[in-house]
Image 1: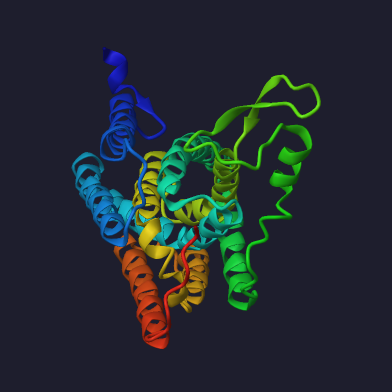
Image 2: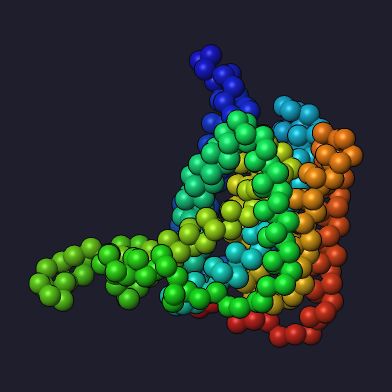
Length: 328
């Protein structure tokens, strides 16, 4: 059993196994016990589930502190906050996808939970690749920093156009090459239907499966922004990965509350853009000041302050506005 203490990507093997096992156990409990029977998730239940995941995510920073020290714990919390905030835009995209395919609310939780399984694998692959590149080519961090600054500036001036599901290239590819059905078959991702040409039974992808695939693709696109942002905070793959996964777990649980309130966060996009510019700029500023990096507590404090100002400003400016209609 000595291999359990072997270092792998910045942490002992047992830490990776324990974390993955804990996440899978949480998902199994959520899907197999708490939500074994599909039902519509209300705002109260959504907030409760999110609160549990968020508490576990914050408590995990204590484990990081005990194993790696205070600086690593603060870096984990900073990554956790940044990932959760950047993924807010993903909530709006997910709502658009569910609305396009007319996915009933009682099946949406199932799609989101299965989507997390894909996130665990895809984010792991992207982070492992990023860590390997950074370790061998340190100058790549400056490319990440420049990319974040450019992305933040573009976000400041970009128009808020609705997400176009119909013209999504992945959806077009699926429609061209795979058998699809427009009919829902309960909570099934695949269904057997008669082929209109031959009359024989054939396996089709249901709208539920299409929604799952598009949500996974959307997460992949958003990861292109969020992962470089956390690598600009720390290059430790264990901290990057665990902060990513815990943030996504809580945000997916919070989806049902946020989907109805997303219109209230009118200025959050601008706060996020400033955060990206700050994270990218601090790498260059640290170099100019002769520092190894901006102190983690400073990074966390500035990030939280910017996001808090964006959220409070948004809620104040949109007070009294009617709630958005949730995806059916």
